Every structure is written in structure tokens, then in C-alpha cells.
Length: 242
Image 1 (spheres, rainbow, N blue to C red):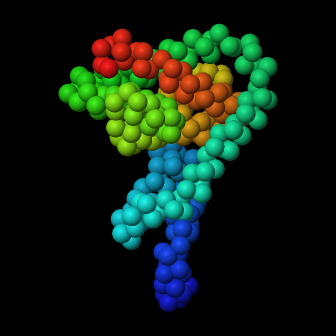
Image 2 (image 1 turned 135 degrees about the vertical axis):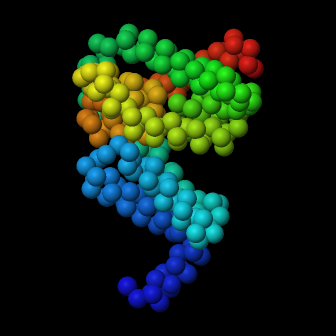
């Protein structure tokens, strides 16, 4: 394509909300192609690569985040319907959910408690401020809820958002390897573990493994979100942090 045509397209996009939408779609498309080309190597997680490409794009073009989000908000809106759509594969596995409700409940409470309090304890041991510790507490919950929890308990929502994304990417990258090392074969068990610890990004990775793993991961993600919002303030108060 001639350079003049590219310049004309950029001038048009830069003055409309389409710049954020277009950049996001192109970044994720390139990241996903790279991921497939590398035989789905976990270190080339498409979410991580897409985020890196978008950060580079915003820095190189000097585009403010607010300007980017004018278009990016359209994709952000689709997170709601996409989350609701997780109910379809979960319904298909509902017969197994009914049989495993007690193990799921125990794993949920233990996972939520350990994920939050271990992060706070490690941060405190390394000398992090109280506000930073509180920001880390809801890191394993999906971002919009985690930011709300963080604000309510005295953390920094912006820092929490970064930690949530990092947690999800790390979980998606190393989760399946940990399952292999531990010789865990049951996809329902792997899904619960992934959903409790790595929320939406981990759930996306779980669906790449199998529908069953993805369904249980989606269930665990939703239940972990509710459970964290309910018990985290109580746990932090019990620990004397708030």
C-alpha cells in the first residue's frame, strides 16, 4: 500500500474513536497468529503480546489512553456478554457440577483465602506499604470487581488492575505446566484451579485445552469473585490490616 494511502488512513482514524478499536483488533490478531504459529506456546500468550503491542503503539504515536479508550470501550463492553455466555458450556457440564458441589465449595474458600492472604503476607514481608498490600489482596478476581474491592478496602484500584492482568497472564502461562508436573488429569479439577487463581485470562486458556476445563474455570471465576467480595474485608480485618 502506498505511503500516502497509509498516511490518509491514519489521519482519518486518529480523529475518530476507531483508532482504539482498530489498534486493539490488529494487535490481538497479530498476537493470536504468532501464538498459533508457535504451536500455542504458553509464553506467547496472545493477551500478553497484544498488551505489549498496544503499549508500544500508544507510546510511539503519542496517543493518550483516554483517546484510545474512546474506541477500546466497544470491546470492553463485550466483556459482559462474553462472561454471560460462559453459562452455556457450564450448563452442558451441570450434571458433573451437581456431583462435585462440596469439593468445589471447599476448593473455592481455600483458594480465595490463600490467594489473597499469601499475596498480602509476601508483600508485607518484602517491605511493601500497607496500601500496596491491600491493592494486592484482590489480584485473583476479575478486574472490574477487583478494582471496586480495592477501592473499598483502601488499596489503589489502578495498581490492582495491573496486578490482576499480571496474575491472569502468569496463571495462563504456567498453569497447564503445573498440572502436568502434578499429574492432574481431570479437566474439572484443572478448571476450578485455573478459574480461582487466574480469572478471565486463565479461563480463556482453559477453553483452549477443553470445553470441560473452560466451563469449570468460568464457574470458579464467577464464584471466586462473589466469595472474595464477601469474605476478603473480613479476613483483612481479622488480620488487623483494616
